[in-house]
Length: 260
Image 1 (cartoon, rainbow, N blue to C red):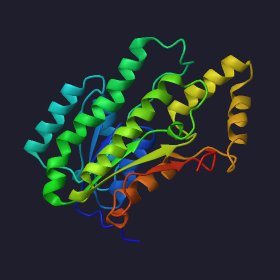
Image 2 (cartoon, rainbow, N blue to C red):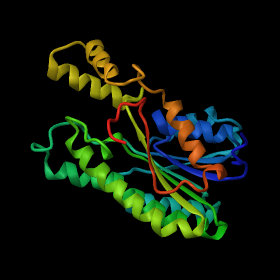
Image 3 (cartoon, one colour):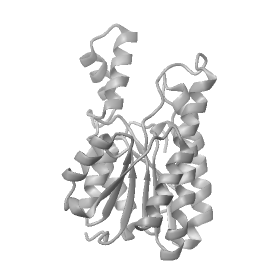
Image 4 (tube, rainbow, N blue to C red):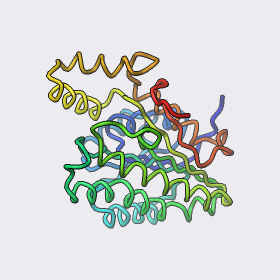
């Protein structure tokens, strides 16, 4: 299937590792011009070199703890270079722990990094999308928007807010040829999963291997996802072929989520 991504410009956040990096590589392999966003310039430079046709791609150094700076840097890039047809909102999840013992600062930081940064990026890229009558906004969230996950209290709370923000945007922007969708990863082989397994191991007094196996047993597929498997879903949603898919939450979780 030709996804018709040649000459499309994509802004991919959190793109030096995990799902973000896998998505950048997938989009580049389909012909898109990819601009990476992350806070570590050396990792950004290295990731660009790993993309197909690296000379076509670029990067922006920005930290998701500072929405105003993020917006300024992306705006400057657009003014000096080009706008974007595709936006992947993606950044690291909040630390785990029960919600009752969470500090207010944890909620504030997560809200800033996830919802506020997503919002300023959308406000920055949508004018170009409207002009092109083509836009794909895809948010990496979590299956917790369908089924809250034990031990991830702050994450469950903020992910739900992002999902509702996204659905509202989808209703507002669909008339302009812009779709807004969420991809909900299950347990995926990233640094985030390694951290979760360590926490489960420490709390349960089991080995990390035992903790990982217990998590796999809850998945009908009996394994963790590869980041590339999430990236393929994102790449399809970013394409012309997905033009009538709008406002959805797509779990990519091997069937783990119990709700429909």
